[in-house]
Image: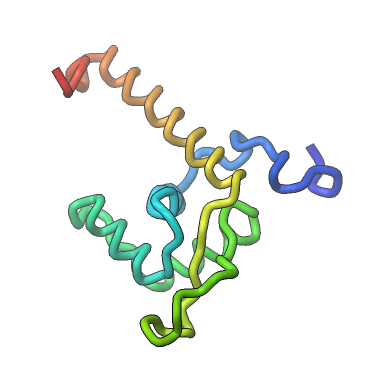
Length: 127
């Protein structure tokens, strides 16, 4: 599929896989709604119980790459400058970004199923 005759919305999410942990966690954070960079870093640290902490370099390098891929975009609307720093940039998932996150989650789910089949994990951790 050529970039020239297919817009980002029509691109195959599988073409982006596998994602790096940083990119996948950023997509997960943005699946919950628009966030600015520092809020993304906080969300990832909280959701991973501190096991993954992105530094500013990794975060902003990943965001720049993700913007170029078309999986995220900068939000047009900004919070009231009286309650938020106007220098902050807010990001959100695009429809392609949501499909890429879903595809990666499915890929990881299949890996977990393989690990369960090999008795590396219990068959169900929720029983």
